[in-house]
Image (cartoon, rainbow over all chains, first blue to last red; front, side, top):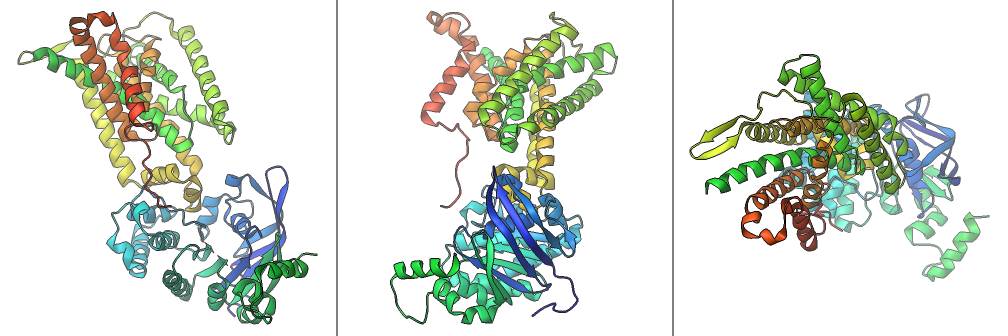
Length: 270
Length: 298
């Protein structure tokens, strides 16, 4: 499972606490690690605090009036929890935000150029560009088109390609499969594996737990701003609770949704 | 026909000035969402600074113009860094009131330093005119058109082909996503104010040139750019230019023909015409001719 042993993890989040505005606490001491070279899945229901955790890592809290009020975030051993987003990108972290967030009025090429904003070496940027184009042939055909006219799946690929243009050591993906057809989800899945195989570490936030755990090395489950469970992906895949709440299959077979909800409250709150 | 062509050239020149002022508004609006009423003040300051560099300090005219534009950029950056940056996240109404406050301060400073009387700008254009066939054209109008055209082309190239220009457009579309790409939004905002200050100074100089002189009431002309902005769409630089030209042409053609053909509208109807055009356009297209057309898929 990746860099076990002495090697420093690419990302270590320790007891991170985040509050929005006048004291709405969303993260209450969440910790997780992404070992260098691995894919880590972060699962959890809506409102569990997954996106907030990503924002805390990538420096995007201030735009939401959020603030790290406790804990640390280490990127390859360097503390970044209070660093501005551009400086974090420069240190090798790129994020694909939920909802794709491509620059709709810009062309595909311009979106990709914006992704390489922090890089100086033109030759290297061009090499990354060629790589992204070979990874996403659909984008190649639409280079000069306005990005807003791409299909949902193509926009997601553009968002991932744009993040890759920064040549990140660690890629954060927030719900890349959201709202996409199963076939496209398959493609996105394969692309994440391909990205990881070139050495980029990945932190993958997903509602689609089957997809996420099928490619992740390690997984975390969040609820109410805390990590409730963690373990190797195959263990989580086999875990009864996870199977019930995220994969929709459980020992009791088919049951009404209301029963599930009640049981969930029993097991994980308290 | 001669008269018509002359009026057209005059109108385009006036419209080009409106376009410059409007560009300043639009650039700040796109980067920050702020409607900067102090823009008109920047226009006045720019004209006076050019006067100081050229007449008071004796710098040749075109270098003095360049210096005034640099100084205008600096003023824009300073106003943003000292005043507007503290207001990030405040309601738009508060921010607008503050920019009106900045305008009021500039309005008071200018007569204190330079007095209220018109000062000669000493521009090489003066009141000279040029004859092309039967048509008599003012040299200052021709220069204004040329300069503004040049600036607009530079703008286009900057926003289209430079890394920073693309970053500025990206920030205008989605500020948070731009941050996530490592784009320094603070830098984008500062540069937006610098550009706004620069084009304002240039606009001020063209308004004070051609024998008009440097006067505090240049500000009023700058405000006449408002219909142009609304017409073109607050968030569209291209719209600012087209809107400016339409308003300029409408104004000059009205001034030329209305006393003759529609004298019952009274005197000075040309000053009302821009607002008239604006209201009609807004009834048909509320977001302006080129205002944000959504290209996002749901």
